[in-house]
Length: 386
Image (tube, rainbow, N blue to C red; front, side, top):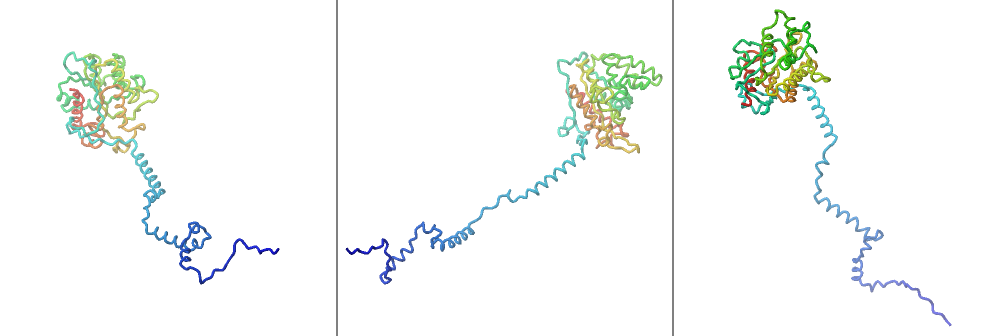
């Protein structure tokens, strides 16, 4: 039997070019599947992709680009350097003015009831109502201190005489010239310094404890050279009934600062040989013995330090024992606050560095104009609660 020849499954024939439908061929070439476009082997992909990329680039160039953020344009290294320089300048300025108080704009000529814009360190404190006692209807005032109250004490323009003209109070002026707030010795040594009996603490023991023995030895040591004001202070304080005293005023000038007596003792806050410690110990005795008395502590007025050439130096620049005069005054403010007594700021509120030339006779003592200013401030504090 003769077998038929096998025919292949896919027979390739050559199309007759004459019978090809050109329209169908064009349609077929235009119809390209998505798979063919995406295929990297596809001729259409190779030809169309460059064109599409060019079109996309052109369209992106025409679209507005978002502006770069402000923070992205900052050079943070420059900012850091500028901040560091600013910090160094601020530290330098702070250290160069360290310990220097800025004078207040207080005008002593102004009415004291109209000085709200003036910042002084006054702190007026009244005695609690349950402790007050006024048996005779007269305001009785005792004054302790040195030159601000003792200078011109017999003159009409002495501070206490001026105060007496401005008020109806009865005032006992027990100030002693050339005395100090701080004691020169821890215990009283009449042979060494008999005037040491008239520092604030020993006078306080005379008032509260009737400690008369040290004054007998002091007067014996001084003989005929006992100052009149020292004798008057002793006679008055040893005999006056302090149950009838309403106000006690304490003011010492810058003598302790100028003579470089210590400001305070860290180990002993009530060390009477220090400016602050003596005031602290004295107020402790006075407040506990006579709680009905209103106490007014007044700071020194401004004073200049005098160098070895006789030149006046600002007391905020010269440091006595490491401290300026304003620091001495500031400690009195602190101690007055601790003991709940009044504090009158004279170093900025009465005679300050700006007006010192108009109110001092020298580097320390008040002239007539300065004494009147102090008298006005005295009355202001005295009648504050009236």
